[in-house]
Image (cartoon, rainbow, N blue to C red; front, side):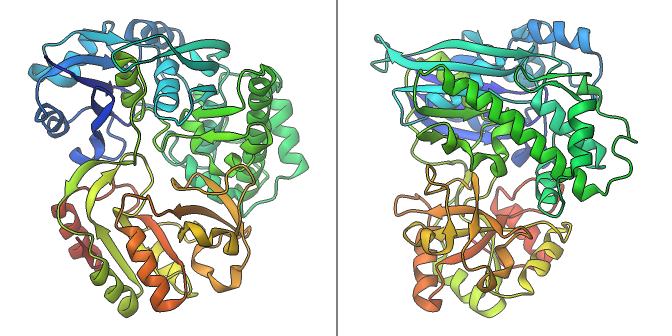
Amino acid sequence: MKHNTLGVSAGFHDAGLTLIDRGEILFAGHSERFSKQKHDHHLCPEIIEKVLSYGPIGKVAFYETPWLKKTREIYAGQGIEGGDRSSTWTTKGALKKEFGELLPDAPIHTFRHHHTHAAAGFQTSPFDEATVVVIDAIGEWETITIWHAEYEGKCMAGKHAKYTKLWSQRYPHSIGLYYSAMTARLGLRPLDEEYIMMGMAGWGIPTGLGQDLIETCLVEDFATLRFKQNLHAGVDKNFMVDMNEYDIAASAQLSVEKMIDEVMARARGYNKSRNLVYMGGVALNCLYNRKLGNFFDNIWIMPNPGDCGSSLGAAALAYGGPVNWVHPYLGTNIGGSYPVQELLDELQKNKIVGVASGRAEFGPRALGNRSLLADPRGAEIKDKVNEIKRRQKFRPFAPMILEEHVHEYFDMPEKTPTSPYMQVVARCLKPDDFPAIIHVDGTSRVQTVGKDSHSGVRELLEQWYVLTGCPILLNTSLNIRGEPMVDTREDADRFEKEYGVKVCS
C-alpha cells in the first residue's frame, strides 16, 4: 500500500516539496536549494527526483486552487511581483507544468491557499486546539484569515484536524501587499527583501509626518484592514519623497504593527483558544512577533510559515491528522558527525567559520546546519561578516545562545521565553560585550539552542562556553546575498573557494 503523501507548493514563489508517511516527515525542502536560483518558483528536476527516490506516492496535494487563483489574476492583472507567474486553470495542469513526465500516478487533492498555511501550522503544533491566524500577501483571493482549529473523530492517525473559518479579508486589501509595496518604494525587491526593510526600521524614526502620510493616504480603516488603493501595483515612487529611507522603513514598520495588532485583537476576541498558531509570510516579521504574548498565552509559528511551508500544509490536509514535528532539519543530508572540534579551532584562530553538516533546514533561516558562525565579541566582526556576505553594513546579525543562559543576556518577551527558530527580537542586556550581534536599536533576533535541538550546534555551543565563558555565537545563513543557502558539500566547497571562508562538514 502506498502511504507517502506529497505536498506541493509551486508556480508563484519559493517552490517546495514535502513528503510525509502516516504523519512522519520524510523530506521537506526548497526548490531553490537544488536549482541554485534564489526564490525559484518552479520545481527543478533535482528536487522532484529527490522525493520520488523515497518510493511510490500514494497522494499528491497542491497548496492552492488554481482555477480560483486564475479568477483573481484575471481581475488583478500584473502586480508588483512581475514576471509570468500565472498558474494554469486546472490542478492537474499546474502539476503537469511543474513535474512534466515525472508527475506521480496518484490521486490529486487541491486545497485553498490559506487553508494550507493554517494546516502547516496547526498540524505541526503541540496543540490539540488553537486559534489560527494567517497573514500573507495574497492567496487565491484571501489575504488574512482567522480560524478555530481542533482535532476530532478518527482518521488513519487516530484524530482528524477540523478547521472553522471565523473571519477573512480579501484582495486587494492586504497587509502583506502593503509591506511589499513599501519595500519596493525603498528600491528593494518585493517578495524578497522585506526583511531588509525590517532591519532598516531600527535606524529610522517613525515620524508623525510619515505616519500621517501612510494612514491618511493608504489606510482606509485599521479595524477592518481596508486600504484606499490597490497596493498590488505598489505606491508612487514620489510617495513620502521628502523623508529619508530609514524613517520611511520605521514608519512602515510601525503601521504594519498597528494593523497586525488589529488582527490579533479580533482573533483573541472570538475567545476560542488562548493557543495561537500564526502563519503566512507576514509571520516572518520578528519585530512584531514579540508582541504576540499581549494577546495569547501559547504561541507556535512553524519555522517555514510562507508559501514553501504550505507544501507541508497541503500534505498534512491530505493526510488528515497531526504531523510529528520534531525539528526543522528535513532537507538534503551531508553525512558524518558534526565537526565540533574543527569549528572550535577555526573560531579561535580566525573568528569566522562556515558549517555544512547534517540535514538542511526547512525554512528561510539557518539554524546551525547551514550557517556562517562567528565570535560575537569583536567590534570588527559584524563588518567582516557583512563583507563576506556582500550585505549592506547597516544590517544586523543574530545570536545563537545556550537556552539556559538566554535570560542572563536578553530580555525575552514574557510569553516567548525561548526562540529556537529565531522568530522574535529581544533587547540585549549586555550590548557592549557583543557588538557583532546587536542592532542599532539594542535588540537581537535571538535563537535559543536547547538540549533537544537535534543539531550538533548544541555541543558546539557547550564547548565554546567551556573554552571562552561565552554561551553565544553569531549565526547567519551560509550564503551570499541573492543566492540560496549552501545545500550540498559541493556548494560548500564553492563557497569556501570563492569567499575565502573555511566551511566544515
